[in-house]
Image 1 (cartoon, rainbow, N blue to C red):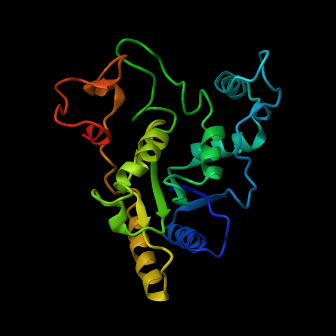
Image 2 (cartoon, rainbow, N blue to C red):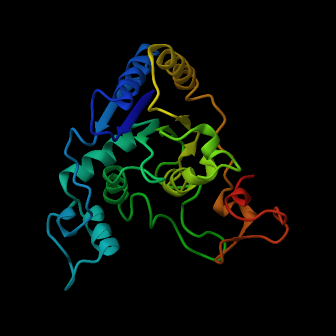
Amino acid sequence: MNVLIVYAHPEPKSLNGALKDFAVQRLEAAGHTVQVSDLYAMQWKAALDASDSTVGPVGPHFHPSLDSKHAFENGLQADDIAAEQAKLQWADAVILQFPLWWFSMPAILKGWVERVYAYGFAYGVGEHSDTHWGDRYGEGTLAGKRAMLIVTTGGWESHYSPRGINGPIDDILFPIQHGILYYPGFDVVPPFVNYRTGRMDDARFARITQALGERLDALFTTAPIPFRRQNAGDYDIPALTLRAEIAPEKSGFAAHLA
């Protein structure tokens, strides 16, 4: 199988760098073909702007969505964007690996999403009607592929527990797992999260790589997070709110898990 790792850490000798190298070795040893988009090494341009189209704005001023659509549909995207889209189409599974900085992904990785997820590629796909509101949230260009997060954080696991001060880790990662990965169709498997990474020794690193290796071995067999499909009947369309009889006792992120 083909696996793409999109990696965002500025220091090759970091824990993240070591885990990325381990992941590549483990996946290749299992017979998979691996590509790595090392965003810092690539000096990835994070800012979405008019230069993302080789012809610039098509109207009197830059319109991020419409200019993205025009560039994608007419083969006018910047080369780096088109190359990353080709990697996504090639991949059977995509791993986003990053340190949790200020409760989200590093800006360079967010910029990768904003530029590569073009209108017509990752959003603005499919018909919009009274029964079907686009191909998204379980459908879309990347449907049939798997995705997983590998995340590190300096906080303790208890800090990210249901009653922890930082909030539950599943809630913090929901906008990434549901909004960035599930939206264009990925089946998202549970994340691999490493806590308290400022305290590391050889024994702990060995335990982490053993656990990560087991997760990578099961990348294509682990049950995905059971997010609700948008167009499968659970949501009123076009309001896109859960139907009154669906999980009436729940609200917030948890309501969108079947």
